[in-house]
Length: 548
Ligand code: ADP
Ligand code: MG
Image (cartoon, rainbow, N blue to C red; front, side, top):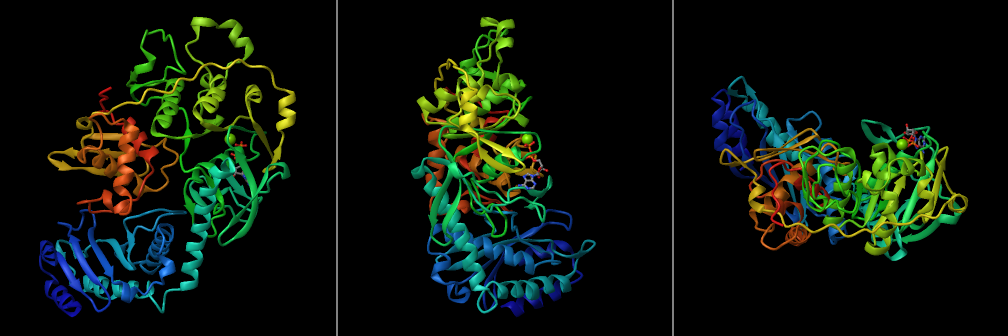
């Protein structure tokens, strides 16, 4: 059959490009089945899509490579990276991802069977088929790629070590709650990155992480054994220190700690609670009927802030909405960096209170809410704040970074703390979204696309996702769009379901099938997103309507 494909491609050589469409369907090779899923209509259209199925008895992956969901995801990720390397210079493309190990449609393992999804730019000379090149890609490069993914070329020890690393990361993250921690940073971790545009570890000059003894926690992991590091306890953690001493770098690592990292990344054992959400100000975003009453009252416009909408939020109201929406989606850990906050939502010092008081100031600063948030709602906060000592009054622990090394300065900060009266924090109202307002169709067809890491095109809408710090992979943006479509078309949103309940139902729907349950009919790469990013994108959908 593979000979038949080669012959077919040779016959097509020189004929009009549209004839490629006749390749659609299955082609069996000695070691795998190739399925041509979708053929581009011209050389300039998005790449064609093919999939490759390697049966279990040919892949010969050891059971240990896929017997648990974590190892299955890790091994699939290992294979996709291996395939990517093998395809360097080819027209075949596989979506291998960056430093995070995510559940991606590009490679899935089911009962030992390996399913790969690839793109290919079908070669042409102008509008004529270049059959020779197509033959080389599909009948030579593709089988060569499959060869490296299986015994004996597959480096089984390296694949196992990759899965061990991911298994340790997940075990560590699972352990956090039992230890009363929101995050953990192992000694020896390398947090800084090579540059603002490279997520690779900084080389050479990086100062490895070393926890202060008083905050050191030791954890026993399945493969790495005993590991010591900074345990960031539940409650309110303040990260202080001079400018340029590594505060934001630590917080960034915690943001990414909701994901697993590849061996050699430096953050393999930097983990946060899976529900940790980065909060920032986001001037200009729209807000649709979000309850920000805890933060904002008595606006000069007279607007009802417990049911607040705007097309153009201010720094402070946008940050208030971001917090309220993260809580609504179920987060119990907030990560905040002074570099990206609205100062007037964070602090108000005594002098300003004397000048502008009572009804003149609609904002209740976060410093007055952070303790009730913890006490009454079980939500922890990790906050970087080098510019004000106001949070000394409310912090449970204070970490100072000095020359990239953390020190426990909790006692010293406590001596400097003052009494502070808390405000009340009423849980934001849970909304029920109108599923008809979440529509993926444009001109009668489903349209889910992305522009870089900035915009998700969803039906007729463009959603600005630039400020979602925990969207880390382009494929996740598509994944978010597909999840929104499933929430709406699958009937999960609306009726009497709150947004959080709808997200629960979605997670249940994905359980077992993983990311591919999202992509029915979608020809392209996508990656499993978190519920918090799905909720965040919904909240930024301009057509969104709230039923109640
Ligand atoms: P801050 O938020 O305290 O002002 P940053 O976290 O932005 O500081 O870090 C300042 C610079 O120091 C960045 O260029 C960062 O890459 C670098 N850096 C951070 N941590 C380390 C480290 N452990 N070793 C070496 N350089 C680091
Ligand atoms: Mg900073």
